[in-house]
Length: 283
Image (cartoon, rainbow, N blue to C red; front, side, top):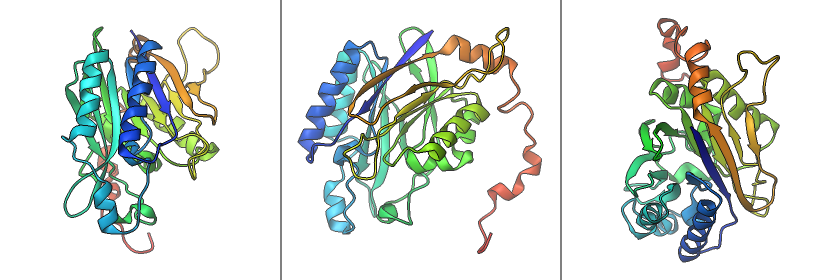
């Protein structure tokens, strides 16, 4: 089964209404291109704009069941295409950095809020999410298990590892930062060490502190009967604004996961106790 992902590497418009209009048009174009899933960059509702005044920030936040998010659920049903819409989520006492995944029938399948918020920077006024989740996504040709992480979550191996242990085959990852060799290498590592696909959608050049280079890694490092290793990167977009389509061969990924040794099979969780301890100063 081939699963097609459209990465909507778009510049923001500066208004909620503009984001809805531009996002809707991009989803329609993605469907015309044959996408099964359209994914937005991080916090699309306001173009990752985070004023450092709590009242101003709260005024930008939207409800998960409000019109902005719900509009993409209706659009997913109309287009018969899954949509991963990211947004600044209204929540008391502090907003969340969230993504909702609608399936092709417009049903909400996954609602994830960023666990590793950038508290050292602009996201110090946000609340962190409460955990990682995986959900089955009906493609019309079968089901794929999907989890989510957002931007800085990528830097923590535990994020993707927890999602793998919960059954994820694909991780969607909205993003808003410069994608340079080290961050791209981290995404490659998350795909390799967990034998899963990782689809990351970033803002293009022209958005402050962003440079495009959205990627899809399909998680298959080598194939039986073929010499050497293969490049798991099936898409690396350029810096420019655009909609970029990648294909994941789920049959190939599943066959690979059945035979290879990464993932859960040879873990030693009884040796990992320190990973669950509260950090101590200086550690």
